Image 1 (cartoon, rainbow, N blue to C red):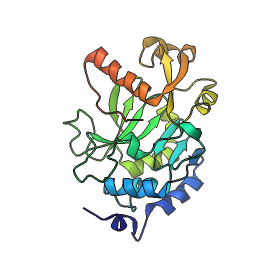
Image 2 (image 1 turned 30 degrees about the vertical axis):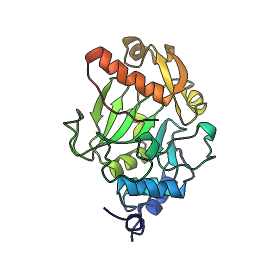
Image 3 (image 1 turned 60 degrees about the vertical axis):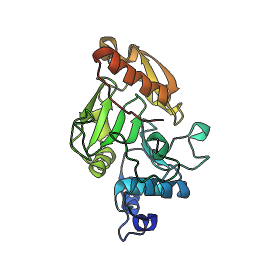
Image 4 (image 1 turned 180 degrees about the vertical axis):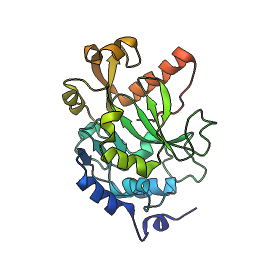
Length: 245
């Protein structure tokens, strides 16, 4: 086990380089303020170094709101951030980390690092993805797609995934899942809400004409629960933990 100072006091921390990458991107990204105490606790529980991009985000910010909040990348948020009383939860809360350090704790199947407003989940695979019913290799980012109700391997680790986002990769990734007026609907959400569609995203009707669906803001926890329940009901497959947000 590494002490927290060992994880933080490194020669080449990732956060300054990430800030430079964030300033250079054309993708809209809002950097939320950090709670230093929560950041230290999360880093210690994760046992990841500030040298990594994951450690840099946890230690350096309260999260990243990408593309007007369409994608929420979790960090260690303080109170009173720009997303208000329904503010973005932290990585610790989303992954149900213990309140105090527990050396035996590990993410069940992997670490949830981001959600999108559709109820999609980006997670870092654990050490045995196959046992957890997930594609890809250990440490690879995978995506739970609410329009197909399954996990997809993205072929990248956390750092490459983040660079792909900042290079504009989300435009193609979400092609067919955008609609006129969607930006305003997303902007009206707080950090703990997503959009529920009817008919649902996985239905033939939504695939045929997404703009004709009705949409309403719901708690993200409810949206994730609906995704999991839909998987179980339609094909009996449990996608596992999708986050506690």
